[in-house]
Structures are given as C-alpha cells and as structure tokens.
Image (tube, rainbow, N blue to C red; front, side):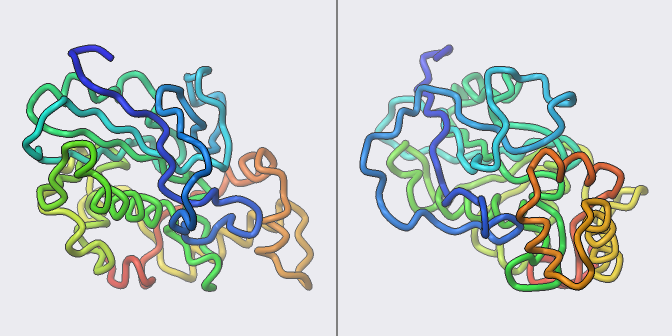
Length: 264
C-alpha cells in the first residue's frame, strides 16, 4: 500500500444479509471462518444502480457487509477514524479509490471504512421486527461494535473512536449522535456537509409515510395484497427491486427504535 501503511480490505463484520435476512437487522458473525480471510482483495459493494457506480473492480451484491482498515506498524494504540461514505443512501462503496485511507493513516490514526446497505435494501420500512427500517444505520452500528471488539489487533484504541462522513455519510453520523442505540460506541463525530436535523430538503419520514412508500414499491413488483408483501419483496430479484424501487424515495424513519424522536 502507498505511504508505508498496512491495508486490510474486505473484512466481514456481519453475516450476509441475504434471503430471509433481506431488510432485517444485520447479525454478528456467528462462528469463526474455517479459512484465513484474504484481506488483500477487493470484495463486493452493496447493491445499487450500476450506472451510478463507477467501480468495475468491485462486483455488486447483497453479500457486502465488509470493512477496510489502514494502519501503520506501531506498538502504541492510536485514535481510530471510522468513515461512512456518502451517496444519498443509494450509492457508494468503501472500494472507491477516493476513499482509500492510506494518506490519512499516516497522521497517527487508524482508519476504518464500512460498507452498509443502500436504497431499499438498507432503508425499506416494513413496520415489523424483521423489516424495521433504517437497517443501513444498523449495519454501520454493527461495524462500530466490530471495531470496538477488534481494532486493538490493528493498533487502534477502542476508547478513542471518531465517526465521520460526507453528505449522506454525514446524515448517518448525525443519526448515530441522536440514536440511543449508538451511545458509547464513539467519542467524537465529524459531519462533513449535511445533518438530519438541518437539511432544508426532507431526509427523514414518519412511519406512515415510510410504509406507504414501501407498499407502493411492492405494488410495482406485483405483490398480491392478500400475501405477505415483505416476503414477496424478499423473493424479488435484487435488480428488479432496484428498478422498481427507484421512483420511491426511501428515507430514514423516525419514531422507530433507532430514531425514536424526530431530529428537529
């Protein structure tokens, strides 16, 4: 890696959110991997519109919950900077070259970046435990928990974590500042352009609006009103879900476990 920095890419931090786990909260990895993880190779980016994602080196897949780490060889534990990418909560990836953390890691910090689910995969709200909405934020939170449990092995100090992000990554940071679930996971936060409580455009919705948007998507995918519409959406092809999901804005939802109060 450049700058004499050690780079570890594509480290899994959660079970793959596929099949029955689509739209559900991420689950921690339940058992050790049988083989050594190759942390030198780019892994999957989360599902999104391929036309808006200029990174042919990283395939798109729902199996995408991985993180990258950049660190220098040192015995003293360093502060950790935990990066959350922007892209309107519909596009982005830790494997985009502009998010390479090598240069930043030369400034006496350990840098971590986290993939999280986007669009309908990350923010569809089903008003039920297995589709609670805001699961892209839950992904980020589980990534933080992984860091707190493991970052000492990479020279990072779990008690000096700064979360930071740009655009919708900054919205995400503000959501973690507000969420009771994220309390104690980090010590500092940097919001680079945008926050859920200040944007003039709408960037959160209530549960009634969110369920209406999700059911409109289900109708577009010809889900029968008499069947379990969440299960119907789980069976849908991922690309079809993106195709029919694009007309319906899927925002973070307040009045929920993750965001119990409206940011304003």
